[in-house]
Amino acid sequence: MRRAGDSTIDRARQEYFDEGKLPSDQLGHAVLRSWIRCSDMGLRERTTPTPDPIPQGDLRHLHERHARFCRLCRPELEMLGVEARETGSVVILTDATGMILDTLGDTAFAGRAAGVALRPGVDWSEASTGTNAIGVALAERRAVAVHGGEHYFAGHELLSCSATPIIDPRGATMGVLDISGSSGTAHTHALGLVRMAVAQIEHRLLRQRFDGCRILRLHTDAGMLGTVREGALIFRDETLVAANRRGLSLVGLAWDALDRVQFEALFGIQARAAWGGTTLRGPNGESFVCEWQDADKGAPEFLAEPARAAETLHDAETELILRTLRECGGNVSEAARRLGIHRSTIHRRIAALPEGHSSQ
Image (cartoon, rainbow, N blue to C red):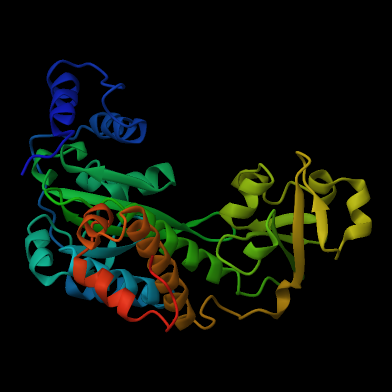
């Protein structure tokens, strides 16, 4: 089934692959950059690869090597897997190279997806399978959606994929979380759901122990402290050594600031007196509400209370469903269409609301 926007992608493919032009006004910049990288690697768009999974012995070693990482992500994988089954999709977890570690979701689509190698032990980096959400997320280190003909290989146009990289507090990419489904179905909020899931995973990573460090949790809104939307900056003495993405964004920094930027450079010399205080003024004059925490008292590894993540993600997804339902005037069918989920999912979430909670 063709969808609105497909003709634009068809024109972009003709201009790029047949006429040698750059269709920058018809294609997202991240996708276009990926096409260029794939062309530079000598990939041919009409020759869709059919990579085989690595041998079972190698796959077993791969799972053993990433066992802790898989356990860390399991609550989010299972939560998204429920939604994926409702929308005919699969949820995919990869390592930092794009190798698929695990999949959950709709078994019927999973069977079709196996035809394009969406299964454990297959490499979905750009070098192996061209432009795809997993490969682009790894290359660009950002959340991305790749739909239909935006995939580099013509044989992948049946897919619609949304992916977000999982980045640890030191700025290293740990892997990618992805939702992939049929390009013939709208998956409007898939990228938003994946982003929320990854934010929860990355927030839980902050529970690991950072010897000799202190964590500064901050936000402009006091109500955000303790949630996945809080910023976190981790200092050893006065040097910034780790963070989450939100924390760096709040103070206008990037990952290359780690091990270089000092507390005083961010919050001023007068902030030394507030070392341990509850409010700070940022480099651009913003006022932050703060909490300090000793970071050497956390879990020795990143596995503290993983089951709580599912509850938090469940609440965030329910909030998104209820907000969309209100925007649609209570029309369940329209809300389901916008969200790209089944109506039964909305009915199930409403039925599970505590007594007295309004969905209107």
